[in-house]
Image (tube, rainbow, N blue to C red; front, side):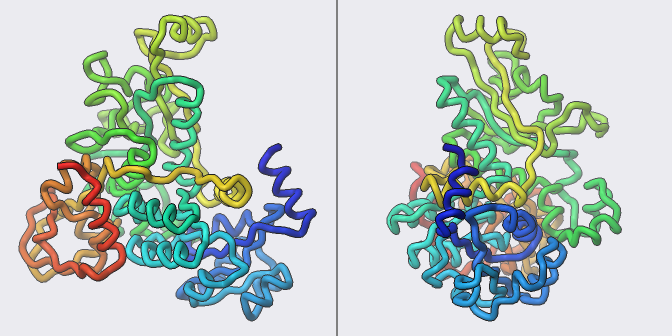
Length: 446
């Protein structure tokens, strides 16, 4: 029975999946624009520090005003409408909320929300993949201990990559590599919110129309978000991170099987079972046709001659050995696709991806020469970018996680392109995200 039919059945039974959304930014608004079209799903509440902004974004998403006019969560639950409120804690604790969707984008805030939701016995879908990169395996353990589900958000690239990896392994293939696409030039690692739109390919007018956050979009451009999402993929799928960070090999989709295999076999990877990002720009910085900038992919290897012969017989595009092929989704639609996570968690009791290890990490790297006394401004800002590393290396060197660099004070100078360490900053060890980080660091074997 399909998920959609089961959602229809929940609607007919007047037994909807009741959802609370925390954060009405871009991701949250994209989901909310679809939520009214999902049978058997009721958004009971939307919590945001700016109620006015949340209401404005609901209007932007074409919600009728009467649909979000409920004065309380109780009224919303009884009437089938939605309450917009500031207090995320009240939303998390409300007995008629089944699933909490966390989409603030702030890993420190998200970690606090997630633990509170687990303690309240609520399932969680987290669109704040930044928290997953910092301490995902610890969050997953907390959820298991509480008897609830902790899930990545479908529509974001990590969950969609997890789906492709699961497809490959369930079919009996060996996963050679998996990842996402990106538009990359080495100089982008120094990009700031002031330079992002020109590099991204949008006008200021388009950015303003979409109410796009330049800091958030800059985190994609400067390599931080690709590193974060690659770490989430590796930790959920049991894949390895490149020792020197993402290499961003360039190519067309139909070149993926040749590129995403070990160097020992003519590819561009350190070894088998890796996470990597395919670049949509060639060496001159020109766009590649048939690229996968906005999508995800998996490369698989035929481990028998019979499999290889089947690839050939069914005209599957392969590498020059005939053993490697790829499967992919060329586009991801972010919050517009979150309904799949809601349905999977609410009906099947399954996560659409969750960390079960700590194999890959995202370290903070200086964008410019930094001086003692400066405040770091976190993901997508002016001071640091994130780069992917194997956690066995990052933990061993005491590297500072990118996700813990928001509003943190430097205590000594750091040169441009240098990985920051814990010794470079003042960090509050009592913060929930820091405590969870210490838990995942303890999972790494020396």
